[in-house]
Amino acid sequence: MIPSLQTVGRVLSGIGPKDGGLWMPKAASTVAHEVDFVFQFVFWISVFFFVLIVALMVYFVIRYRVRDGVDAEKTATHNLGLELTWSGIPLVLALVIFYLGFKGFMDISTPPANAYEVLVTAQKWSWQFTYPNGYVDADLHVPVDRPIRLVMQSEDVIHSFYVPAFRIKRDVVPGRYNKTWFEATDPGRYQVFCAEYCGTGHSSMLANVVVHRPGGFETWLEKASNFLETMSPVEAGRKLYTARGCAQCHSTDGTVKTGPTFKGFFGRAVTLSDGSTVVADEDYCRESMIDPHAKVVVGFEPVMPTFQGRLKDEEITCIIQYLKSLGSGGDDAVDR
Ligand code: CUA
Image 1 (tube, rainbow, N blue to C red):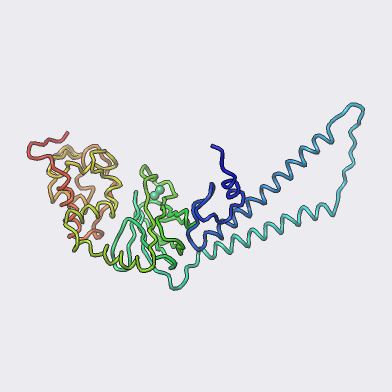
Image 2: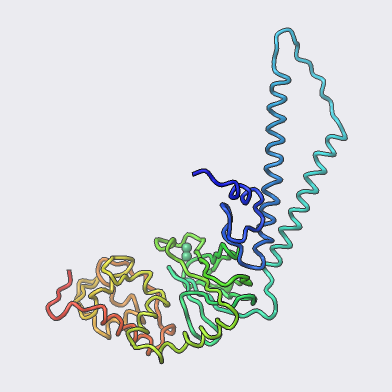
């Protein structure tokens, strides 16, 4: 595919293509242009010196090549003016780059005092966002044009919270709180990645940032927070299944992932890793959320984190109702 002139122009100019270019995704936060500018600045300095040095090298190789009848002659001594120039220019450039980079780093590291705070929990392999009223969601919803401060922790290994459109990336480390902030400038939906290799599910450790128009965020939060009252238990359970990360490891279509599929799981006789058998009833499902390593289904690793204290009783009940709705093996079902 031959890129259009417009695309070439956008790539070459680089700075601030609103919908993103060949190299950069859409710039959708207040710091994005600052980051892009430093990148372009360093990049074009590098291109300039690369071309200059290679061109001079080729020229000298040709100009001073070995020729018949011309004896090699050593004439070079030193040239103070030249040496000062080639030391001074890089020094100034390095100082300018340091200044731009440091200023941008400080801006990205220092959230404004009035920022809205959301807690972020990373665990293998999902993100959870806890809002000030206690509501937890698998996506990050924020209002537009408002600084958002994220206080992030990991339940297990090191993850990294990365939103390319906002130009922010920050490690999420167990045992400490890492913070980052951003202010989204355009309503829309943006991709969150995990940027630290954290195991088999790393590449599917995704979430969305949903940037709401003015007023939309408050309405959304109010509605979303009341889901236990407004939804049926099965619907609420389905919502929790995706919002709380169950979906990362348990499919509902029969696919085997990190954990057993939920399709036809409820009510079935299940063989455990110690050879015993248990019926996957309400109590078994509940115990597996509270104490996941107590009874592990044969063929699976005991890697599930506990949800004790993180799921309310009512929420556990809804998830169990959802599991039931996915069908059961019935009385005559035998495991494997
Ligand atoms: Cu979490 Cu990679």
